[in-house]
Image (cartoon, rainbow, N blue to C red; front, top):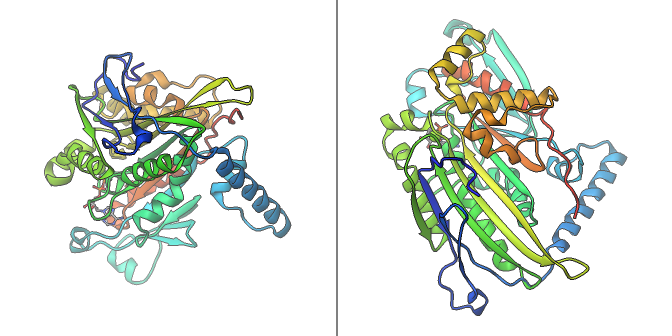
Length: 403
Ligand code: ADP
Ligand code: MG
């Protein structure tokens, strides 16, 4: 079923394995999706039950929990996510390096990350105050992890997303959002560059490596689609035969953003880019009945948050009236409703939230990465982003049904 009614998807990339001499890929087959889009899948025989990995991780998790109870030491947040029945959204912050342009504009850094968790935000009123180190406004935030300027793409991927890739292979849903103002580093984090590929690319590579390593007790079918600008029209479809090619396709999909700086702001601040990977896994249960499990991983480079961040009700209404970034507002309303524990969550208000219904508040591993700039010129945006991220920590997803 097409997740977006009256599809407004601009691009769908379909990833398959390369025509592989390995006989295990002989039964690769093509499926036709219910909505008429052609989805190309492949099947891969598995060698060892997936559950050994999970079992190992879970026992490692409870060992750590026991150790923590003994020593009072803080638990690794990623294990917390697994062992905590009412799993809450994991919230991370990534601080990007100061850009040349910002330095030239006389920026000073107003963000400091300490202990890989704590973010200190300080505003200096003027150069005079700055020189006297007089703090004017500031706040301290704590997140599951905070990445300083020096954090590598691999580090960000491993800490935030690699567990979700594993979970998707077990038939669970997962989603990763990058949130922040235009220019804060969302696309860099999600897509990256050819030299420094981001979370989307590293996740796909990892997924395929893991699928190949797995073996005989079931089959995996991988569907991959890249939706860009879910408010635009048109549909095109691509097939990729390798992860490098996925990278090329993703870059192509983002070409307007990455190669044309003037258009970049125009496009990326108004559209969301979503990479969705659906992994179907067929296996047999204890009674030898065939069981189908489906896991969906959504990687989302959200539109620039600056327009949706208005706190003033009047502005909010005028933004809604102008229909700018309605979906981001809808996302914020869903998050507010989830935080406040409301029964009715307004998923229907936008296509973005409809698409993410099962990724927010549902049985899903959810990760938010809040991207921020160090520059004091972006103080307001950074403060809003951190405030929003701080609030997102309160969202709890439903507990998993254990199978
Ligand atoms: P956004 O998608 O949030 O609008 P971008 O990802 O396009 O922002 O980042 C703005 C600029 O900063 C780009 O030139 C990008 O390459 C650079 N940049 C962002 N994050 C980093 C980082 N962690 N390391 C190096 N350069 C970065
Ligand atoms: Mg961007």
